[in-house]
Amino acid sequence: MFLKKISKDVVIIGAGAAGMMCAIEAGKRGRSVMLVDHARKLAEKIRISGGGRCNFTNRYTKAENFISGNPHFCRSALARFTPQDFIALLEKHGIRYHEKKLGQLFCDDSSQQIIDMLLRECAAARVDWQMPCQLKQVEYLPADKETQHTERKFVLTTERNTIEASSLVIATGGLSIPQIGASALGYQIASQFGIRVTSLRPALVGLTFAAEDFIAFKDIPGIAMDAEVSCRGSAFRESILFTHRGLSGPAILQISSYWQPGDLIHINLLPQQDAQQIFLAHRHSAMLLPNLLARYLPKRFVQVWCSATLFQLSMTAKPINQYREVELRQIADKLHNWNIIPTGTIGYRKAEVTLGGVDTHELSSKTMESKRILGLYFIGEVVDVTGHLGGFNFQWAWSSGYAAGQVA
Image (cartoon, rainbow, N blue to C red; front, side, top):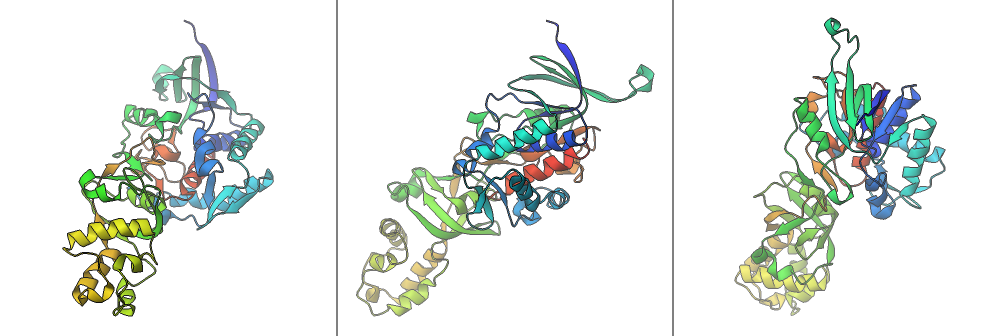
Protein backbone atom coordinates (compact mmCIF):
# COMPACT_ATOMS: atom_id res chain seq x y z
CA MET A 1 0.00 0.00 0.00
CA PHE A 2 1.30 3.44 -0.96
CA LEU A 3 1.61 5.79 2.03
CA LYS A 4 1.38 9.53 1.57
CA LYS A 5 4.56 11.40 2.55
CA ILE A 6 4.32 14.45 4.84
CA SER A 7 7.12 16.81 5.83
CA LYS A 8 7.15 18.67 9.16
CA ASP A 9 9.73 20.51 11.19
CA VAL A 10 8.76 18.71 14.41
CA VAL A 11 6.92 15.47 15.13
CA ILE A 12 5.84 14.77 18.70
CA ILE A 13 4.89 11.23 19.70
CA GLY A 14 2.39 11.46 22.55
CA ALA A 15 -0.34 14.07 22.96
CA GLY A 16 -0.49 14.23 26.74
CA ALA A 17 0.47 17.13 28.99
CA ALA A 18 4.15 17.31 27.97
CA GLY A 19 3.50 16.63 24.27
CA MET A 20 0.88 19.34 23.88
CA MET A 21 2.95 21.88 25.79
CA CYS A 22 5.93 21.17 23.54
CA ALA A 23 3.75 21.42 20.42
CA ILE A 24 2.39 24.79 21.53
CA GLU A 25 5.81 26.29 22.16
CA ALA A 26 7.36 24.92 18.96
CA GLY A 27 4.36 26.14 16.95
CA LYS A 28 4.67 29.62 18.44
CA ARG A 29 8.17 29.78 16.97
CA GLY A 30 6.75 29.20 13.51
CA ARG A 31 7.76 25.55 13.35
CA SER A 32 5.40 23.18 11.55
CA VAL A 33 4.35 20.60 14.16
CA MET A 34 2.57 17.25 14.04
CA LEU A 35 1.24 15.52 17.17
CA VAL A 36 0.84 11.74 16.82
CA ASP A 37 -0.97 9.63 19.42
CA HIS A 38 -2.43 6.11 19.41
CA ALA A 39 -5.21 6.86 21.92
CA ARG A 40 -8.83 7.40 20.96
CA LYS A 41 -9.43 9.82 23.83
CA LEU A 42 -7.13 12.80 24.26
CA ALA A 43 -5.14 13.33 27.47
CA GLU A 44 -6.96 10.79 29.63
CA LYS A 45 -4.36 11.16 32.39
CA ILE A 46 -5.19 14.85 32.67
CA ARG A 47 -8.90 14.10 32.67
CA ILE A 48 -8.86 11.56 35.50
CA SER A 49 -6.31 13.33 37.70
CA GLY A 50 -7.26 14.99 40.95
CA GLY A 51 -10.61 13.25 41.09
CA GLY A 52 -11.55 14.86 37.77
CA ARG A 53 -10.36 18.35 38.74
CA CYS A 54 -6.69 17.98 37.76
CA ASN A 55 -4.02 18.81 40.32
CA PHE A 56 -2.23 20.75 37.57
CA THR A 57 0.73 22.13 39.55
CA ASN A 58 2.10 22.91 42.99
CA ARG A 59 2.93 26.46 44.05
CA TYR A 60 6.00 25.29 45.96
CA THR A 61 7.67 23.25 43.22
CA LYS A 62 11.42 22.86 43.63
CA ALA A 63 14.04 20.36 42.52
CA GLU A 64 13.89 18.62 45.91
CA ASN A 65 10.36 17.45 45.06
CA PHE A 66 11.72 15.12 42.36
CA ILE A 67 13.54 11.78 42.33
CA SER A 68 16.13 11.10 39.63
CA GLY A 69 19.47 9.41 39.12
CA ASN A 70 20.68 12.96 38.41
CA PRO A 71 18.99 15.10 41.12
CA HIS A 72 20.00 18.44 39.61
CA PHE A 73 18.79 17.66 36.09
CA CYS A 74 15.30 19.13 36.52
CA ARG A 75 16.45 22.50 37.88
CA SER A 76 16.98 24.23 34.53
CA ALA A 77 13.59 23.38 33.02
CA LEU A 78 11.71 24.11 36.25
CA ALA A 79 13.36 27.52 36.51
CA ARG A 80 12.42 28.52 32.95
CA PHE A 81 8.75 27.51 33.12
CA THR A 82 7.44 27.82 36.66
CA PRO A 83 4.10 27.10 38.34
CA GLN A 84 3.40 30.83 38.07
CA ASP A 85 3.84 30.63 34.31
CA PHE A 86 1.26 27.86 34.05
CA ILE A 87 -1.10 29.72 36.39
CA ALA A 88 -0.82 32.75 34.08
CA LEU A 89 -1.90 30.52 31.19
CA LEU A 90 -4.99 29.41 33.12
CA GLU A 91 -5.86 32.98 34.00
CA LYS A 92 -5.50 33.99 30.35
CA HIS A 93 -8.22 31.44 29.56
CA GLY A 94 -10.40 32.42 32.52
CA ILE A 95 -10.04 29.07 34.30
CA ARG A 96 -10.73 29.34 38.01
CA TYR A 97 -8.72 27.27 40.45
CA HIS A 98 -8.12 26.76 44.16
CA GLU A 99 -5.44 25.52 46.53
CA LYS A 100 -6.44 22.35 48.35
CA LYS A 101 -3.45 21.93 50.67
CA LEU A 102 0.34 22.12 50.68
CA GLY A 103 0.42 24.24 47.50
CA GLN A 104 -1.65 21.77 45.46
CA LEU A 105 -3.73 23.61 42.82
CA PHE A 106 -6.93 22.20 41.29
CA CYS A 107 -9.51 23.44 38.80
CA ASP A 108 -12.69 24.73 40.46
CA ASP A 109 -14.71 23.02 37.76
CA SER A 110 -13.28 20.17 35.69
CA SER A 111 -9.98 18.84 34.38
CA GLN A 112 -11.57 19.04 30.91
CA GLN A 113 -10.90 22.78 31.13
CA ILE A 114 -7.14 22.10 31.06
CA ILE A 115 -7.50 19.83 28.02
CA ASP A 116 -9.67 22.39 26.21
CA MET A 117 -7.18 25.15 27.03
CA LEU A 118 -4.30 23.13 25.57
CA LEU A 119 -6.36 22.35 22.47
CA ARG A 120 -7.07 26.04 21.93
CA GLU A 121 -3.39 26.88 22.35
CA CYS A 122 -2.43 24.11 19.88
CA ALA A 123 -4.93 25.47 17.36
CA ALA A 124 -3.52 28.99 17.75
CA ALA A 125 -0.02 27.59 17.14
CA ARG A 126 -1.27 25.76 13.99
CA VAL A 127 -0.42 22.31 15.33
CA ASP A 128 -1.56 19.38 13.16
CA TRP A 129 -2.82 16.07 14.57
CA GLN A 130 -2.86 12.39 13.76
CA MET A 131 -5.02 10.69 16.38
CA PRO A 132 -5.75 7.85 16.81
CA CYS A 133 -2.77 6.68 14.82
CA GLN A 134 -0.38 3.78 15.40
CA LEU A 135 3.35 4.35 14.94
CA LYS A 136 4.96 1.46 13.08
CA GLN A 137 8.59 2.47 12.60
CA VAL A 138 11.10 5.23 13.37
CA GLU A 139 14.23 5.74 11.28
CA TYR A 140 17.01 8.30 11.57
CA LEU A 141 18.95 9.59 8.59
CA PRO A 142 21.90 11.72 9.76
CA ALA A 143 23.35 14.44 7.60
CA ASP A 144 25.76 12.89 5.09
CA LYS A 145 27.44 14.92 2.35
CA GLU A 146 28.42 11.81 0.43
CA THR A 147 24.78 10.78 -0.01
CA GLN A 148 23.69 14.40 -0.51
CA HIS A 149 21.62 14.35 2.71
CA THR A 150 22.53 17.88 3.75
CA GLU A 151 20.24 17.83 6.78
CA ARG A 152 19.40 15.14 9.29
CA LYS A 153 15.88 13.83 9.32
CA PHE A 154 13.66 11.34 11.08
CA VAL A 155 11.33 9.18 9.03
CA LEU A 156 8.24 7.89 10.83
CA THR A 157 6.00 5.28 9.31
CA THR A 158 2.48 5.29 10.72
CA GLU A 159 -0.64 3.37 9.76
CA ARG A 160 -1.71 6.45 7.78
CA ASN A 161 1.40 7.85 6.11
CA THR A 162 5.13 8.55 6.23
CA ILE A 163 6.26 11.67 8.10
CA GLU A 164 9.66 13.27 7.70
CA ALA A 165 10.90 15.75 10.29
CA SER A 166 14.16 17.33 11.43
CA SER A 167 13.14 17.06 15.11
CA LEU A 168 11.46 14.17 16.92
CA VAL A 169 10.09 14.56 20.44
CA ILE A 170 9.16 11.52 22.54
CA ALA A 171 6.37 12.38 25.00
CA THR A 172 4.87 8.91 25.39
CA GLY A 173 4.64 8.83 29.18
CA GLY A 174 5.39 5.83 31.35
CA LEU A 175 3.84 2.47 32.15
CA SER A 176 1.35 3.66 34.76
CA ILE A 177 -2.38 3.13 34.17
CA PRO A 178 -2.16 0.90 31.07
CA GLN A 179 -5.96 0.76 30.87
CA ILE A 180 -5.95 4.30 29.46
CA GLY A 181 -3.24 3.57 26.92
CA ALA A 182 0.15 3.60 28.66
CA SER A 183 2.84 1.64 26.84
CA ALA A 184 6.60 1.05 26.70
CA LEU A 185 6.96 2.76 23.31
CA GLY A 186 9.12 5.63 24.54
CA TYR A 187 11.58 3.30 26.23
CA GLN A 188 11.70 1.12 23.11
CA ILE A 189 12.56 4.14 20.94
CA ALA A 190 15.29 5.15 23.40
CA SER A 191 16.75 1.63 23.28
CA GLN A 192 16.56 1.63 19.49
CA PHE A 193 18.93 4.60 19.46
CA GLY A 194 21.25 3.20 22.12
CA ILE A 195 20.00 5.57 24.81
CA ARG A 196 20.07 4.11 28.30
CA VAL A 197 16.84 3.58 30.26
CA THR A 198 17.09 3.18 34.02
CA SER A 199 15.20 0.46 35.89
CA LEU A 200 11.44 1.01 35.97
CA ARG A 201 8.85 0.37 38.67
CA PRO A 202 5.45 1.66 39.80
CA ALA A 203 5.51 4.78 42.00
CA LEU A 204 2.95 6.81 43.93
CA VAL A 205 1.18 3.51 44.49
CA GLY A 206 -0.37 1.50 47.31
CA LEU A 207 1.67 -1.13 49.15
CA THR A 208 0.70 -4.75 49.80
CA PHE A 209 1.62 -6.97 52.73
CA ALA A 210 1.90 -10.69 53.44
CA ALA A 211 -1.41 -12.16 54.56
CA GLU A 212 0.05 -13.43 57.84
CA ASP A 213 1.44 -9.97 58.67
CA PHE A 214 -1.74 -8.11 57.81
CA ILE A 215 -4.50 -10.57 58.68
CA ALA A 216 -5.59 -8.58 61.73
CA PHE A 217 -6.13 -5.46 59.61
CA LYS A 218 -7.95 -6.96 56.63
CA ASP A 219 -11.37 -6.18 58.12
CA ILE A 220 -10.86 -2.41 58.49
CA PRO A 221 -10.58 -1.18 54.87
CA GLY A 222 -11.49 2.48 54.55
CA ILE A 223 -10.06 3.48 57.93
CA ALA A 224 -7.79 6.53 57.51
CA MET A 225 -5.62 8.47 59.93
CA ASP A 226 -2.86 11.05 60.09
CA ALA A 227 0.60 9.48 60.36
CA GLU A 228 4.25 9.97 59.49
CA VAL A 229 5.69 7.28 57.24
CA SER A 230 9.41 6.90 56.63
CA CYS A 231 11.79 4.71 54.62
CA ARG A 232 15.40 5.09 53.43
CA GLY A 233 15.81 8.44 55.15
CA SER A 234 12.71 10.06 53.62
CA ALA A 235 9.56 10.81 55.62
CA PHE A 236 6.07 12.08 54.77
CA ARG A 237 3.40 13.29 57.15
CA GLU A 238 -0.07 12.85 55.65
CA SER A 239 -2.98 10.44 55.76
CA ILE A 240 -2.66 6.65 55.52
CA LEU A 241 -5.56 4.48 54.39
CA PHE A 242 -6.20 0.79 55.08
CA THR A 243 -7.26 -1.29 52.06
CA HIS A 244 -8.18 -4.94 51.55
CA ARG A 245 -4.62 -5.69 50.45
CA GLY A 246 -2.52 -3.31 52.54
CA LEU A 247 -2.00 0.42 52.86
CA SER A 248 -2.61 3.41 50.64
CA GLY A 249 -3.30 7.11 51.18
CA PRO A 250 -1.05 10.11 50.44
CA ALA A 251 1.74 9.27 52.91
CA ILE A 252 1.99 5.69 51.61
CA LEU A 253 1.92 6.80 47.96
CA GLN A 254 4.77 9.21 48.69
CA ILE A 255 6.95 6.64 50.46
CA SER A 256 6.32 4.04 47.74
CA SER A 257 8.66 6.02 45.48
CA TYR A 258 11.50 5.39 47.95
CA TRP A 259 10.63 1.90 49.17
CA GLN A 260 12.46 -1.06 47.64
CA PRO A 261 11.70 -4.78 48.07
CA GLY A 262 12.82 -6.02 51.48
CA ASP A 263 12.73 -2.58 53.12
CA LEU A 264 10.86 -1.89 56.33
CA ILE A 265 8.53 1.08 56.42
CA HIS A 266 8.27 2.91 59.73
CA ILE A 267 4.93 4.43 60.74
CA ASN A 268 4.55 6.97 63.53
CA LEU A 269 0.89 6.65 64.48
CA LEU A 270 0.98 9.67 66.81
CA PRO A 271 3.16 12.24 65.03
CA GLN A 272 1.71 15.14 67.03
CA GLN A 273 1.72 13.40 70.42
CA ASP A 274 4.20 11.86 72.84
CA ALA A 275 2.76 8.48 73.79
CA GLN A 276 4.90 8.22 76.91
CA GLN A 277 3.58 11.56 78.13
CA ILE A 278 0.01 10.38 77.47
CA PHE A 279 0.66 7.25 79.54
CA LEU A 280 2.37 9.26 82.26
CA ALA A 281 -0.63 11.59 82.51
CA HIS A 282 -2.91 8.56 82.97
CA ARG A 283 -0.48 6.45 85.01
CA HIS A 284 -2.96 5.83 87.81
CA SER A 285 -6.05 5.49 85.62
CA ALA A 286 -8.21 2.38 85.56
CA MET A 287 -9.09 3.10 81.94
CA LEU A 288 -8.37 0.25 79.55
CA LEU A 289 -5.46 0.86 77.15
CA PRO A 290 -7.63 0.61 73.96
CA ASN A 291 -10.12 3.13 75.38
CA LEU A 292 -7.36 5.61 76.08
CA LEU A 293 -5.80 5.25 72.61
CA ALA A 294 -9.24 5.60 71.00
CA ARG A 295 -9.12 9.25 72.10
CA TYR A 296 -6.28 9.78 69.62
CA LEU A 297 -6.78 7.13 66.91
CA PRO A 298 -9.80 5.56 65.13
CA LYS A 299 -11.48 3.13 67.53
CA ARG A 300 -11.70 0.21 65.08
CA PHE A 301 -8.01 0.54 64.25
CA VAL A 302 -7.07 0.74 67.94
CA GLN A 303 -8.91 -2.48 68.72
CA VAL A 304 -7.11 -4.37 65.97
CA TRP A 305 -3.71 -2.77 66.55
CA CYS A 306 -3.79 -3.37 70.29
CA SER A 307 -4.75 -7.00 69.80
CA ALA A 308 -1.92 -7.62 67.31
CA THR A 309 0.75 -5.54 69.04
CA LEU A 310 0.08 -6.66 72.61
CA PHE A 311 0.19 -10.27 71.41
CA GLN A 312 3.63 -9.61 69.89
CA LEU A 313 4.77 -8.09 73.20
CA SER A 314 3.30 -10.99 75.22
CA MET A 315 0.85 -8.61 76.90
CA THR A 316 -2.91 -8.25 77.12
CA ALA A 317 -5.27 -5.28 77.11
CA LYS A 318 -5.81 -4.09 80.66
CA PRO A 319 -6.19 -0.86 82.70
CA ILE A 320 -3.29 1.59 82.37
CA ASN A 321 -2.47 1.36 86.08
CA GLN A 322 -1.80 -2.37 85.76
CA TYR A 323 1.06 -2.02 83.25
CA ARG A 324 4.63 -1.76 84.43
CA GLU A 325 6.53 1.34 83.26
CA VAL A 326 8.78 -0.74 81.02
CA GLU A 327 5.69 -2.19 79.33
CA LEU A 328 4.24 1.25 78.68
CA ARG A 329 7.55 2.34 77.17
CA GLN A 330 7.43 -0.67 74.83
CA ILE A 331 3.87 0.16 73.76
CA ALA A 332 4.78 3.83 73.27
CA ASP A 333 7.74 2.82 71.10
CA LYS A 334 5.44 0.70 68.91
CA LEU A 335 3.00 3.60 68.53
CA HIS A 336 5.78 5.87 67.30
CA ASN A 337 7.65 3.24 65.33
CA TRP A 338 5.30 0.61 63.92
CA ASN A 339 7.51 -1.38 61.53
CA ILE A 340 6.10 -3.48 58.71
CA ILE A 341 7.62 -5.00 55.56
CA PRO A 342 5.57 -4.64 52.35
CA THR A 343 5.62 -7.55 49.93
CA GLY A 344 5.16 -5.30 46.93
CA THR A 345 2.95 -2.68 45.33
CA ILE A 346 -0.48 -2.94 43.73
CA GLY A 347 1.23 -2.38 40.36
CA TYR A 348 1.08 -0.14 37.33
CA ARG A 349 -2.71 -0.35 37.00
CA LYS A 350 -3.09 1.84 40.07
CA ALA A 351 0.25 3.66 40.09
CA GLU A 352 0.11 7.36 39.37
CA VAL A 353 3.54 7.45 37.74
CA THR A 354 6.50 5.33 36.65
CA LEU A 355 9.74 5.65 38.61
CA GLY A 356 12.80 5.68 36.36
CA GLY A 357 13.00 6.23 32.62
CA VAL A 358 15.32 7.64 29.98
CA ASP A 359 18.61 8.29 31.77
CA THR A 360 18.99 12.03 32.37
CA HIS A 361 22.76 11.76 31.88
CA GLU A 362 21.90 11.06 28.22
CA LEU A 363 20.01 14.36 27.80
CA SER A 364 20.67 18.09 27.87
CA SER A 365 19.04 19.54 30.98
CA LYS A 366 18.42 22.79 29.12
CA THR A 367 16.77 21.42 25.96
CA MET A 368 15.87 17.76 26.71
CA GLU A 369 17.79 16.81 23.54
CA SER A 370 19.67 13.55 23.32
CA LYS A 371 23.43 13.93 23.54
CA ARG A 372 23.80 10.97 21.15
CA ILE A 373 21.22 11.76 18.47
CA LEU A 374 20.81 15.38 17.41
CA GLY A 375 17.18 16.39 16.98
CA LEU A 376 15.83 13.66 19.29
CA TYR A 377 14.14 14.85 22.51
CA PHE A 378 12.53 13.14 25.50
CA ILE A 379 10.09 14.94 27.80
CA GLY A 380 7.64 14.26 30.61
CA GLU A 381 7.17 10.96 32.43
CA VAL A 382 9.26 8.93 29.98
CA VAL A 383 12.33 10.66 31.47
CA ASP A 384 13.93 9.54 34.75
CA VAL A 385 12.40 12.44 36.71
CA THR A 386 9.61 11.47 39.11
CA GLY A 387 7.79 14.02 41.23
CA HIS A 388 6.23 13.70 44.63
CA LEU A 389 2.46 13.54 44.96
CA GLY A 390 0.69 16.88 44.71
CA GLY A 391 0.95 18.39 41.21
CA PHE A 392 4.70 18.08 40.76
CA ASN A 393 4.57 15.55 37.91
CA PHE A 394 2.28 17.79 35.87
CA GLN A 395 4.65 20.71 36.48
CA TRP A 396 7.51 18.56 35.16
CA ALA A 397 5.41 17.83 32.06
CA TRP A 398 4.78 21.56 31.46
CA SER A 399 8.40 22.56 32.19
CA SER A 400 10.13 19.83 30.16
CA GLY A 401 7.66 20.29 27.29
CA TYR A 402 8.32 24.02 27.30
CA ALA A 403 12.11 23.49 27.35
CA ALA A 404 12.06 21.20 24.30
CA GLY A 405 9.52 23.39 22.52
CA GLN A 406 11.91 26.33 22.61
CA VAL A 407 14.46 24.55 20.44
CA ALA A 408 12.94 21.53 18.66
